Image (cartoon, rainbow, N blue to C red; front, side, top):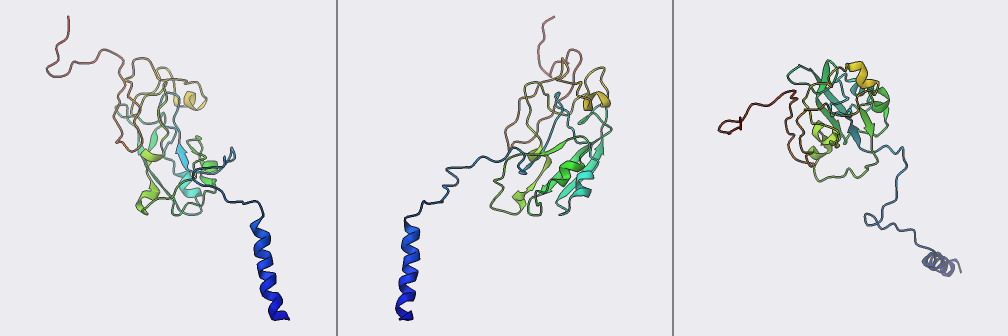
Length: 205
């Protein structure tokens, strides 16, 4: 008798589950919205005029429990300025093969340069592509921003930037077209007066 009841009981579970409502999610065609404070891919933020918030202090790298962040700071100069402070993050990398998306790096950042987005689709075909560089992490340019390097806003100081007093790029700064993802970064320079004509260019007097 037990030999007969065991198969019947097994098929009973199967038939019972056949008529239940399916819980299959049609991913990636149908995606569930994430929570507002979801810990996804990182982003390096900019000031409203386009200068980078990262000052290359490396506190995020020290706070990372998985040793997934690598930062190299460098000094700003008047001719080549990337942030309003003395230094900027020349090299910034996050290894998503190690990252556990804990958010401790965001808490350690003193300038709110590093935040986390809702992007969670980080799978790729190679290990090298999961090491995100500064160009991939840096936020895109908005209408009021100018790509770095360029000078700080006239009459403003580093403290003014972090107090939120700078709201847009300074007048007369060269406006660069926002680059699409995957393209090489373009150079920009700050100009306060008329520019010199290019070689062979005819100008009206």
